[in-house]
Every structure is written in structure tokens, then in C-alpha cells.
Length: 458
Ligand code: UD1
Ligand code: CA
Image (cartoon, rainbow, N blue to C red; front, side, top):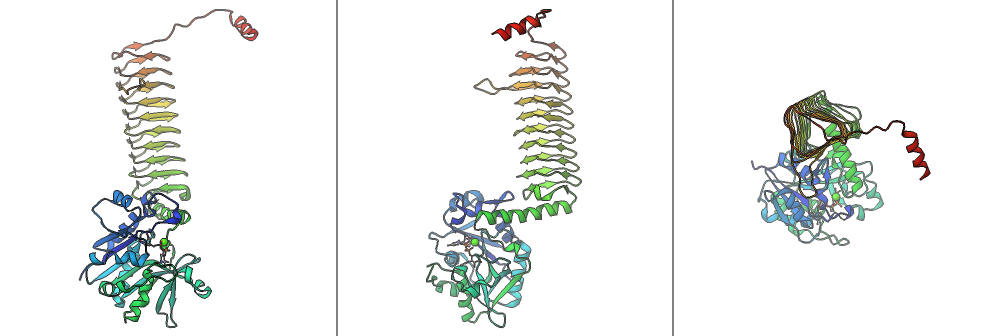
């Protein structure tokens, strides 16, 4: 038997989003709406076609040319959108039609839709759902026997039809032979002048095909996104799914409602996540970590036993047993070694920090390579930028950098060297040496009072 194909309708203008970004590219939990739809479609069909229109180049840029696209040059409705794909479609078999703006419909539901369609030997099977508030959706009309007779859009529905709570989710399964024969005879809606795909159902019924419906008991997966309120609602639902799965797999969340994790992020067992934590993109967290409160990880890898509180880690890697924060900012291309301590108000940029090194407070490290067992005193600064170019600093194993020192790059501080507090170091420091660059301290005994008095008179 032939495997089913899928068409995803994604050419609508998305007017209600008020956005220059194509509607189907608006993300939910880190991935565009259309990505979610495609993922579900790819799991149950052999070949997918995406109908694109305005904003189509953005869609192509994101998904690349490996996908099969069909252009709908004029936005003349869902029926017209599907019509554009007919020349590409096989003559027989089954076709799943999905909307690009219903990202919560997962593969298991689509599989059941296909199954019910096949068992019912229908010409068309529509996926429906009972909604508490059906406003904005097409209503499903049935005859006294319960058979589906058609779908009426909100705009054209009589008050009695508007009271119907069973809605069209916008997902269908069609017999391709029936589609090839009857879709071209669809006529535009006289009021809206659009070709409604929903009008195909009565057309098929009058041609003698069975039209079936598969009604979802939980309506939430059917949520269609037309504006940003619905985008937020769908995102919240998807977040529940992601967090639920992680918790079932052994992650503790103090407050899943304020824990924001992108799809695809991995978190190991026994890790505890405090509220207001955001894990984005290609992020991978190991086991037994402590994240948050208020931690933001972007495209980063944290190994096991890492603590990261009130801090941001961005495109960086943190090794086993390191502690970060509170209030640290780790910028791209940094490598925080095992058992390192990066404390409060520390910024690290494009640097690597060796095993067990301590950068406990108020420090900037940029373009530096710091070895193991180094101590960076409070307020020590790596001066990596001369106003024109960035330069490298190397601090070798076991060096001690006193508080409030400036290390002016390019510079190497040798292994075990000691930099006295308050120094500005501009020349390389040989291993094992002590270096200081302070103005000698002066003491003028008994002068304090006179000094204060003079100051007041001024
Ligand atoms: C559509 C259905 C409605 C259903 C709802 C489910 C029709 C006439 N109405 O309404 O019964 O309850 O979905 O969410 O089908 N699109 C195109 N080209 C077009 C027009 C739309 O590709 O010319 C695409 C859109 O990008 C979108 C999908 O088709 O992904 C649905 O279009 P939209 O305008 O959102 O239809 P709804 O008003 O939501
Ligand atoms: Ca819609």
C-alpha cells in the first residue's frame, strides 16, 4: 500500500499577528510553529508539501531547499491553497491536509485520523473537537443521524450554528482520487470571494463519498494560532508537555509554571530547577545540577553536579562540579573547567578557566586562557581591548592575582606567580615571581584633622 502524503497550508498572511515575520515562523518553545507541524507530519507521512505565499522566502530561508514548497501567488483561501499542489500529488492514496497554524497536533492524533479514515473507507475525514469557546472556528454541521454534512465558518453561521461547539480543527484526510476529481470544481464563497476547503466536504458527499469525522476528546491540541494571545496559550500548553516529560524522567521543578524550557533541551536526572529559569536552544544539562532561581542558559552545555544561580550562560560549556553565580554572565565560547568557582558579578567572555580555579567576585575575564588552581582576586580585570583590537592573556597554573589588579593584554602571567593587589601589569610575569606596580604608600602623621578642615573651608 502507498504511504500517505501531507500538504501543509502555510500561505496565509497572518494579518492578526501584526508582524513582519511570517506567521508560521513565530516560535513556540524555541521552534517555529511550522516546525512542530512538520515534525508531526513527517512521523506519519512519506512526503510533505508546504504551501507558501507572502513571507514564503522567510520560510524557505529557515527550512532550506530540502523541503518541497508550492507557491500560492494570490491568497484566495484554503481550498485554493490546496488546489495549487494538485499537479505534484499522486493520483491515488491518501492525503493528510494540515494547517501551518495548529502546532499542537501531534503524530499520535494524525495517526489515528489516518486510521479512522482508512477503516471508514471515507472520501474525506475531518478532525474535529468540542470547544468550550468555539469563537473564530468553523462549526461542524451534522444531520439527525450524526453524519457530517458540512462546515460553516463563524462569519457565515446563523445564531443556531454559532451555538454549535464542535469545531473544525483544519486537519483532514482525503482520498487523492476524489480530490483530483472534485477539488477543481470548488467555487469561491459568494460573500468572502475565497475558496473554502471546507466546502469540499458537501461536494464530495453529493458525489457519493462518505465523509467521516474524528472528534478529539481533548480540544487543546486543536488550538489554531491566529494572534499572539493564542500563540501564548499554545506555548503554555507545549511548555506543560515539555516540563511534564522532564519531571516524569526525574527532574525536579519547584514551579513548572515559571520554568521555560525549549523543545530539544536535555536535562539529566536529579537536577533541581528553581523558578524563573529559562533553558533555550541547543542546551544540554547533566545530572544532579542545581539551576536557578533566575538562570538563563542559551545553547550551552552543563555537565553533572553544576550549580548555576541567577546567572546567564550563553554558547559556552561548563564542566563537572563547577559553580556559577549568583549574578555571573558567561558569554560565548567560554569553557568553565571542572570544580571552578565563578562567583558574583563576574563576566567571562571567550575564555577558558582551568580546573579548580576561583573567580569569586567582581571580575572581568575576556580573551583569556586561565590554567588550573588560579585565584583571581576581587575586582581583578583582564584588560583585553586597547580601543582598536582585542588581545590574549594567559595565566598559568597556580598563579595568584591580587585584588583590583589590571592585567593589560597581551600578557602572560607564569605558573605560581603572585601579582600584588592594586597592580597594573603590562609586562609578562615569569613563573614563580612576585610582581607589584603600586605607588608607594605615604603616611603623614597627625595630618588628618588639618586635611579635613581645609576641605571644609573650600
Ligand atoms: C480555518 C478553517 C476553519 C477552521 C480553522 C482551524 C477554512 C475556510 N476555515 O479557518 O474551518 O476551524 O482553520 O484552525 O478553511 N492558508 C493558505 N492560503 C490561503 C488561506 C489560508 O495557505 O489562501 C493557510 C494559512 O496559512 C493557515 C491555514 O491555511 O495555516 C488556515 O487559514 P486561516 O486563514 O488561519 O483560516 P481560519 O480562519 O483559521
Ligand atoms: Ca487559523
